[in-house]
Image 1: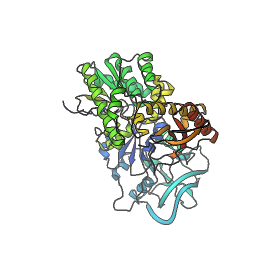
Image 2: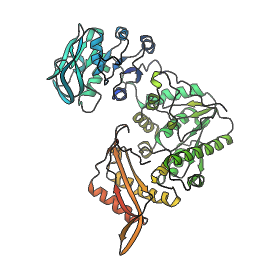
Image 3: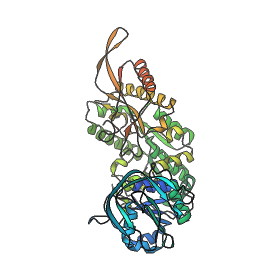
Length: 524
């Protein structure tokens, strides 16, 4: 058999002209693209090596030059082709992007000896970017160099105490620059600044909505697949669920979903998946109960990487066996997200190179199928909005991220049926109380961990020798970094009391108060 062929997705239709965010190495580049989309304007991230010809071919509504850690005068500093400024496309430079624009167009940038990091008060003089906004604004700065002279013909429209040129504009050439970061939450009026640029300067229509995405993807899927049959590995996570529903909306019974239930899911999740897809949406679904097979492969294994490898291999064997029963199927659905494409180098044209761990359950690489990737243009928050629009239950849409190997890597040690049942119950109690407290949506992840050790306890008048449960709850924007959640003490007391009283095999509950870095979110 040949290898999986990832066909390039067609470009967005003409009515979805993009805003291109040029990545100049800043940590917030991806966030800028997300913020533009939150303004209901379609955006894409592109590398700083993008050529004027490539930009012209995309016919963008606007360009945004991101921030970056370098000095514009450094030898290795990222550059752009200055001809991009001559295209007549409205362009916004942010932080380093503003400095690069000033330097390229005849202004000056200097190391003034005064740096600004963190919250900074900016006074607005005038300008299209600040229309309708207060004269005094709190902004978030992060720079050592400063623009000391704007490009010829540009007006200074805002300044701070330390940086007299905090923003400039050249309305005739549609060139705008801000030294602060409007994309971060620490700039309260930042979204309004972006909206002024997008709506007033670039005349961008606010049409990038969940309903529009569904309509567009349905057309694409039909054009790609035609009357052929499609296979989807359903994991129960939001990405594979939304991808499956989009394909089902486009193709109906041409789609068959295979749900490999490895027995490592949270409490009642397998039943929810089957009821939602087979019962509610009437999607053709093959439910494979393979718990005993997976537990047999995990017997005696306590190394986390060995667990992952064995689970991945077994998943492939089960999935291949079920797919063979269906006969020849040409297309395979994969829940690749836009962030996966970016992280795999897709913004520089390597769109087919998706990291293997982004495959749902570790799909077999040697299967001779073409990929259908309806989420390829979407970030995670957009996938959730599309899921809501498609009618996916709230409990599934907003389900916390869950690792492919499931509870196997939340049991620290050998995975057994008994330990899985203990962990499932503890995790269920934890999430039940978190939901009851109204905190579930505020947390990025919240889960229980079972270290396969025992400690002494006292229950009643007897000594016990039982397992501990560790609570892990974190807040995060994107899982790249995470902080431990400050859960209320009375809530922790309730959780601990319930777990110990309701699960005889547990006599101790601990709270993980480490952040990422240096820790990871998951324990294995």
